[in-house]
Length: 367
Image (cartoon, rainbow, N blue to C red; front, side, top):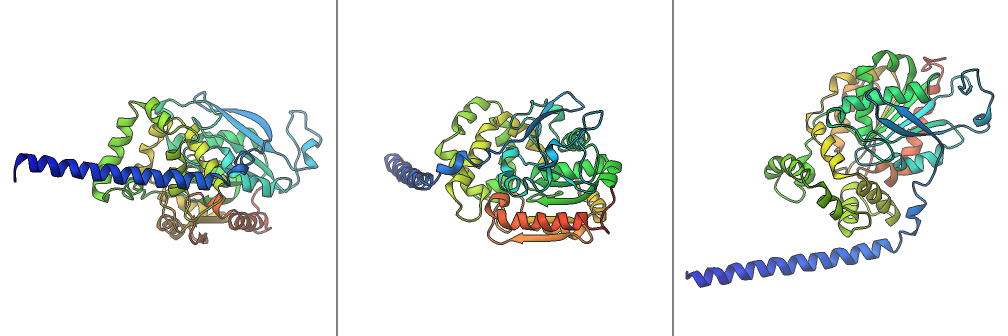
């Protein structure tokens, strides 16, 4: 075949690919416009606020936290050191959010339990309104130490129920590993939602678009390479971009959901600098907290997962459940990684069950 013929075929191939890509982008833009027509309620999601508190970590990072007291106990008499008295045996629920999210992701749980139970929410280090971490402390183990500080400052007495989503669940496991005495004495219930103790293969997310074997090699290199130009990446990921919206839609949810849910996730993702994503990313493929799970056998533990979760697969939740005697596994058919939004009623009902189990006389360990 002549050189000109090869050039002609190559040009035709490039042209066809470009046309297909243009058509694909046109379809994506239309889908985004259609879905965003129902996004008027996005601003209302994540708008709940409580008493703002600041927690200082052991390495000097300030964590933004919010406390929702239980009416009418919010204005109850205080002790000489300023701590509020609470009802005997009433647990504080501490919610720990996931990677690239903020405390606002718990909107539906916060709305449901507000006024019923005392709740603590906080933005993990480098996320949301909390201070930035250095690279050395951007680890899951450090997140466990941070959780210990949050409990010590904002729930210094009485029983505690821990609810962790995604990386937040890993934070709970790290807390149990590094602070076993506090865990044993204070924690009366745990919910591990859309998370994993290990066995994560982050390239599986990328392999939805390219072959798995190639993704295993490219994913860590890609993140490391992009970390050298975080500003460029953040411009592409800016809030309100079509790309960000579509990524949130495809990777966070299993079924079609209201556009406001997608907008909420997109806003949180876009507000997390890529430098922060790159800092924490190496933690996931090396995570191994399976040996810690035996400690959860002593408290009511509920494991919640969506069967279409592409970030932390249902198989990883089943593996955790198999390591915790007595654990309750709750699978939500068709749901994705953001099951706390997508199946909010099922998740809230599960947390109701957890709280009932945690406060039952046989389960009470903290007076």
